[in-house]
Every structure is written in structure tokens, then in C-alpha cells.
Amino acid sequence: MAKIKKSKTELKGQREALHRYLRFLPTLELKKQQLQTEMRHVEQELHANADEQGAIEAGLKRWARLLTGHLGPLAEATQVAEVVTTAGNIAGVVVPVLENVRFQELQLDLFETPVWYDDAVPVLQSLVALAVRQRVLERQRSLLAEELRITSQRVNLFEKVKIPQTEENIRVINIALGDAQTAAVARAKIAKAKTEALTSGTVGA
Image 1 (cartoon, helix red, strand yellow):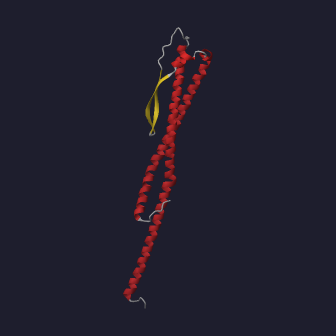
Image 2 (image 1 turned 45 degrees about the vertical axis):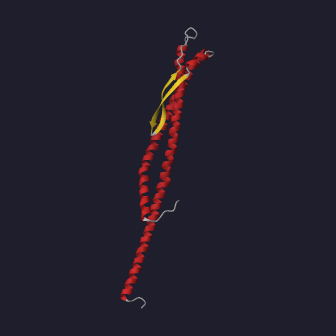
């Protein structure tokens, strides 16, 4: 810990610093709570998204034999052309928000492809879109987690270091100033006694 000056100026500075810390700490704690809430919300969305993916994949099992050997056109139909995201703000953190997933436009030859392609294409596109959404949500979680880590460190710094340290500095300075004042009063009394003694002519008698 850095050595502090035992002065009234230093005492004033330490008191002002303590006031700032105590005023700023609730804001940090509120941000931490908001980030924790948003983290839980994103986790819920991730689980829901994964469940939806699982349900679609389970439904595709009945098409397993049909899909075998016909993936060429389907792969083209599920090729992502563009992922549209915007910048969102969650608890003060800028995160990507998925707006849309656009697929390559593909004109299937009705005479060359099985009739069930019409049903398979939108289902497979939904599955791909969910996979894209999963990645975006994971990115949101990563950004929020990093901000939560930094905010938690700041809360701990204020709670466990800055505030206790500043309170201790104030206590030490107050004691030092009090001792100095007591010593000054004692010296004044001694000086007064000597002056009175000189005045009365009793010194050296």
C-alpha cells in the first residue's frame, strides 16, 4: 500500500475518494445484476434453440432413406447467401442480433427432383437458420460473459480493496491528526506554564 500523508489535505482527498467509490459501487452492482439476468436469458434462448434443432433433426429421421443420394440439389437449396445482423445493446454491451438468414435462390427442376423436395427444402433451411442463430446467440453469451467478468472484478475491487483501504487511510490520518493536535495542546500548555513561571519570577528559584 502506498504511503499516505498525514495531513488535512490528504484527509480531504481520501474522504472525497471514498464518497466517489460509495456512489459508484451501486451502479456497478446494478450492472452486474443486469448482466447476470441477460446471461440467463441468453442461456434460455440457446437451450430453446437447441431443442428446436433437435426436434427438426428427429423429424428428419423419417426422410433418412429419401435423403440418401439426393443431397446435391438440397445442399444448394440450403446454401446461405447472407446472414443479416444488427447491433443490439444488452445491459450496455453491443452484441450482434440476428435479423434474417437468406438462402441462395434455386429453381428446382420439377421433372428432375422428387416431389418431397418441396417439403424438405424449407425444413432443412429452418435447420440451417437455427444453426446460424445458435452461433449468434453464442457470440452474445461470450460478449456478455466477458463484460460480466470485468464488472465483477470492478465490484470486488471497490468492495474488497478500494473502500476498505480508503476507510483505513481515513482512520490512520484521523489518528495521526488527533495525536498531532494532542501534542500541540501539550506543547502549548508547557509553553504557557513556562511563560507564567517567568512572569511570576519563580523560574530557577
